[in-house]
Length: 259
Ligand SMILES: Nc1ncnc2c1ncn2[C@@H]1O[C@H](COP(=O)(O)OP(=O)(O)OP(=O)(O)O)[C@@H](O)[C@H]1O
Ligand SMILES: [Mg+2]
Image (cartoon, rainbow, N blue to C red; front, side, top):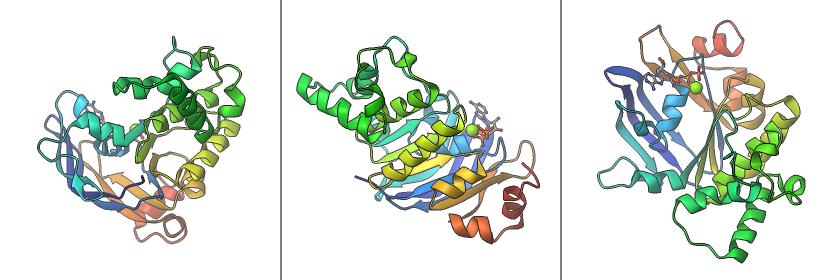
């Protein structure tokens, strides 16, 4: 299920503003890639370009290629909705649908894709997705209660369950733990470690310990100044980035000298 992502010569614009310039990178299947860098350097912008979410923003556009196992998602005729089914996204703030039950939340993405699903199959999918998100034991007796009644950490895992219920190949996460307490953060990190057996995972984080703990590879984005484009400065094994990065700017950032 898991797929390789090849990014070639990617430029990302908001209107005339070039927000991210010249990204070339390959992300291997069944790995966790952490994206780090100072605020405003284009991490979220880049992440959104990996599932064509960027283009739902008026004026935003992308040049270059993003391929999943060799097939360019930006090629003419490719349906962006199909791309987003293969490449799921989890956002910073847990965003369960407030009027829906836990169960309905898990199934929401599947239903959006207009899939008709039998009750028994839906029950199985709800259970397997919640198990996959490490949440089943905590919610199995309250599947019909509102998703908004869960704790923040549980809500984030519910959103992860909703994402994996669609059976994506890649899971993108934009600061998925920034609204969570340390215990919930560790629960989500444990989950990420499990998910990588099946999915290609890309996570944006401001937490250096988190990047070091839960990723195999790390990409450092940086920006030279206001109005300048963000660039991927360095991409390497996480261990290498955090022990002996090749670039001075990376070293400065991870050691807290700026950003
Ligand atoms: N919808 C938008 N319209 C115009 N400019 C935008 C939009 N979203 C982001 N930008 C600009 O693009 C640049 C990159 O923003 P982005 O949100 O990708 O940064 P980031 O690295 O995710 O920052 P943070 O760490 O604060 O989340 C910034 O200059 C930002 O102001
Ligand atoms: Mg961001």
